[in-house]
Image 1 (cartoon, rainbow, N blue to C red):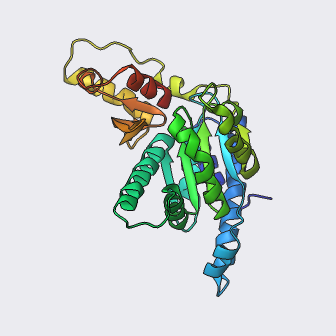
Image 2: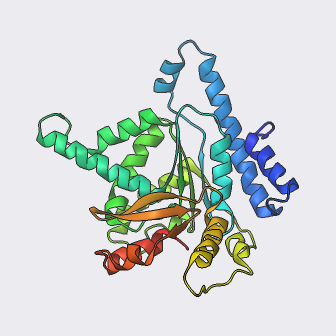
Length: 299
């Protein structure tokens, strides 16, 4: 399918012309895939709008375009391209989230459903089913940054959760540092996770963003790595370095799940996290928490 008229493509090309980013053949190929998906989603929306029974069409025909799973080494522009797509695409209901943030929300919803079951407010014995139903009603497009599975609790529910989302026509886009076959590598009971990998291959186009340049590190070239003495100048320099990594919005607060606990992250953006010394060393965090943080963020 031709991607004529895709906003993500025109915006990417405009950024190249303006010198905001460098022309990169590997990135351009991925942008074309995003552009095709944008057009497919736009055509799907127009078809529903043109039908007097559009809502009925949606419920009876949950088929949807294949999503995208874009993987590659850190700093290659995966997040930037996905964000361009997310900002450009027109759908009824879309959500963009860091994957660990999304899963923390899912676990919170499951916990709430279990509490409702105990109070006799729910008839179903499976708390995941109503959670998946609610998500499918809220969004038609889910975009995940830093898709990475390390938690067995996540691994064991992903298959059933995404099976429901895909069945209801939700389109999923994800960026990751690893290819699907390497997700949850070495994890406990990984054999139970393999059907989910097969589901990714079926429902999502898998693309390797094999760019040669680490743009994240390129942004930091020429910046000092040590600031002394502490004071306003040092803080301003760190703020400038963070802005180069996280982008103009400076990132946003989030949290990552470690089993039943949430680890607050003061600022996160473009796969990077920013903590103060006290955030990391004056809190009741253990080795497992630090490992989870290091796996969730590349910087």
